[in-house]
Length: 163
Image 1 (cartoon, rainbow, N blue to C red):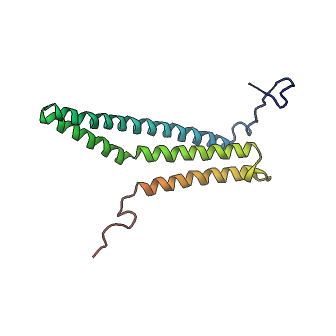
Image 2: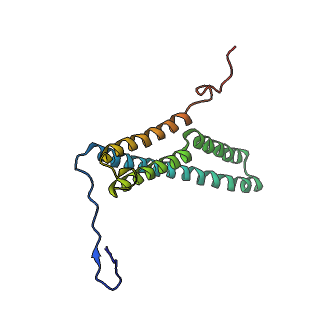
């Protein structure tokens, strides 16, 4: 791939920005976390879309089968399938996790780009320390959101008052 600064001049290759030292634990952690969040986001997206498409298909054919006078077990089975699919989505939170993980991966990538560009909070001498702290802050925030979304009402103090 080439880039032109001047349309009349010859194209020159784009130079890659070097990453920090090989074996750097901060950089390895950043790459590993971006890969993990990407992988988990993609997996949750696939599960969410599969469940929703199956649910939509079952919901679409249910009135058709009912109108054709199908056996009760067919329409009842389709209705039960819709409930199970929606319950599975609610239980495993595929949509919420897809969005949350995608957002965290994007935030981590943003930090990586700022670091490589010596921009934003990474313009000072302590930029490597800043990167480590900001990476851990983003991961900690996401973990906190995950924990609070997986607590029941009684875990959050929203249950019935004790007598």
